[in-house]
Image (cartoon, rainbow, N blue to C red; front, side):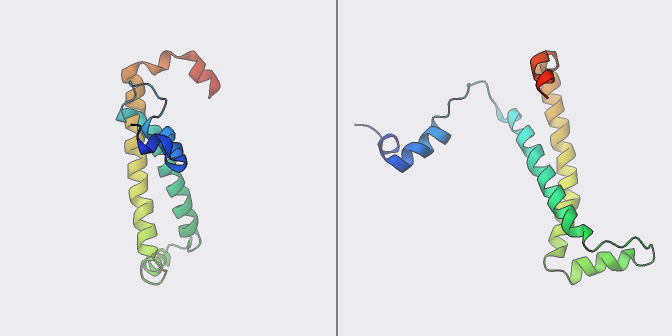
Length: 116
């Protein structure tokens, strides 16, 4: 008897995309840091745009601007903390991504460097 995940039309699409993914078995969790870098960069850009809407360049009112963002803007405290901690996560993922490349010797693959 076959599994329902291989016969049902909707579950068949999900099964072929996630469960029986045609990927090599040598992929480990170390290969996720490239996509995490993209997520961190996207979060940084979005939160940075929203925080820039309340930016003041005057040094006398800069602290008041931060206080305004945290107190008066809806979820401003969350934007500020996501932006600050997202930068830290970005660099952690960057170091792990580059470290994985050095460990596995990916710097010798000239085709990858030529593609971009």
